[in-house]
Length: 281
Image (cartoon, rainbow, N blue to C red; front, top):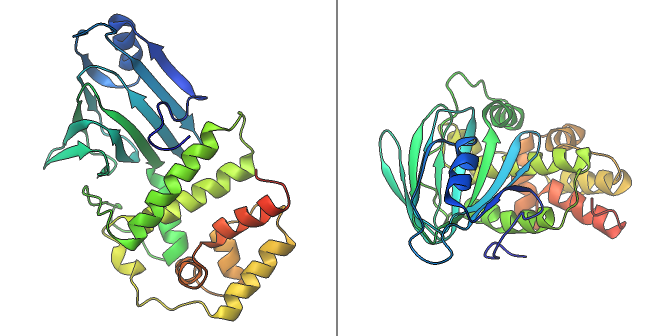
């Protein structure tokens, strides 16, 4: 299964219906003021909503088959919308952003917004808990976060850091789509750590200046030491911050240097080593 498959995350079903009223009732339990158009052709509504919930991260896939509008109240998570097919629009307090396949838009916490989806619209949504992402920023950079983390709404997918996230998400969706619940707790933890790290790198935000290219790099011996640790303790859960402490660098420098010299992150390497031992989870 790939990102443009018919129903990613199909093993995490929330809504399945061809009935307009049933779709309205189901969506009303999740969204504020859903407005669902009546069927305009044979087949009518084809409402599908799948949601995989980890501890601090959620991945959602949805399609509806008819034009639809939602209102999202202010919430405590970052929301990145990743259209798969069709077109739509996102209306926030300060801007209107088009939604289309290949593009993306992101909303920061505590900002309500409204969306309109066309009849052919399909979408993947990434949600990350506000406090968890802020804690990750502090752990990676050592920053004092005296102002709330705010992400720019327009996602620049041409940036190298953004491409890393774009390449990883289909792999993650494929993995989850083939998974059987419950997921191993250690796998959830490391997956969330990796996602949050990539998210902070991929998006421009009000603390991006702490994650610029002039940061001190980890030395090659430090990278190799981390690899040796992962190889020796492959069956233990680990965080990026723990690995950074082992070699005496900050987590951001270790992540950036791994990507530069190895082409993957420390936690991606840990997943590779586990796979070699036949322990993909």
